[in-house]
Length: 232
Image (cartoon, rainbow, N blue to C red):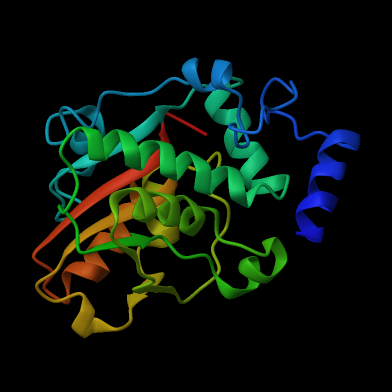
């Protein structure tokens, strides 16, 4: 009770603000105000998960069925601002809230009980220590909570990699082609997996992860990302 009073006092002195527009948040809002949430560039890929440009990028690269993205990435747009906040401004909770929002949207459209596990793309241990959290895992946790399933770390990033920014499609693939390996292999076999990352450009990272997971014979592999676009 004492903690609640202290938290309420802090909210009066230092009110929480929207991560995008910086307006003060109401008690029923979390990280983003309702106005900004309504203006997010939400895609419709969950309605055409097997027939969209993201799926086309992965054809011939990895065994994957459905490919979806919550937001359409655009340079200097809302999605880039959100990704910047999450990755560089210590906004782990923002990633989780966006995962919840997308999870509720997927649930509303018939995706409950589709996947046994939500599997985040891992960070290398060195980068995880520096950042303090894996933004893809935070997004995956939100998805899992909304969809009433489990977020499971079934991949390991063996090697640190250079940033994918400004690399060509071939260079991105070479950068991650042998980076990932599986763990807890018995939990992969015969299960339906949703592989999750924060952003998708060429799809090289996700394809490499999917190939590693597929070696353990899952029932199916689908993919979902927070944002997707032509470049990042």
